[in-house]
Length: 198
Image 1 (tube, rainbow, N blue to C red):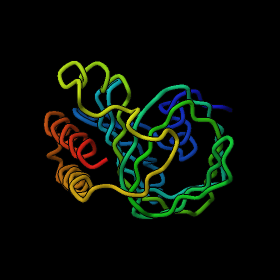
Image 2 (cartoon, rainbow, N blue to C red; image 1 turned 135 degrees about the horizontal axis):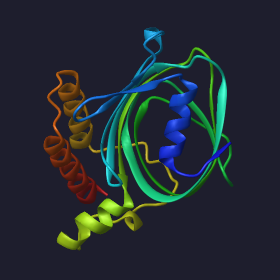
Image 3 (cartoon, rainbow, N blue to C red; image 1 turned 90 degrees about the horizontal axis):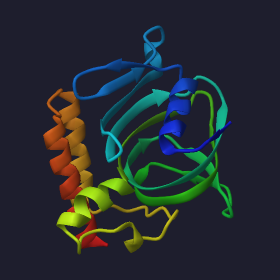
Image 4 (cartoon, rainbow, N blue to C red; image 1 turned 45 degrees about the vertical axis):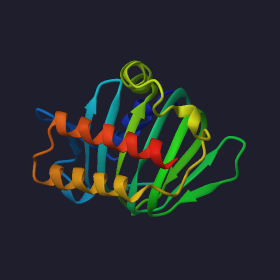
């Protein structure tokens, strides 16, 4: 199977993890009630604009996914545990180890592999291009733009202010106090810090 969008890719990973959605007012928790030891995946989102996701899970079996994503998006966050093996078209096979990261994905093609027993823990924010084009730039035309960054290049760095924002969002999620308005305010703050830093 070849996934065509990042959402489709996410759905296929969750299916391989045997996770099903549990809906709450402001977020969705994906887990397997029969196998709680596999962990969980939490998603907060504003449809078509952005997502904040938290993953803390173990891989039940080997699997791989091919992807061909024509969309354009920004992802940044922190991987606390776990190593990912992937291959991007026209690039050598790579792996991603625990660190902070920022990447602008555009016409991304490749393959990613997961190994049984590996444990992953991380949190990331995904910004879709529609959020920049439809929400940010009409109000702030001289602010951040995806063209300010190299496409499909992983920056293994985030300003300390952004790592602090991600940690703050994690704490709010754990205490069940992360509201949609607070999340969006922190996403705007993170974008402002990115623009200033890069």
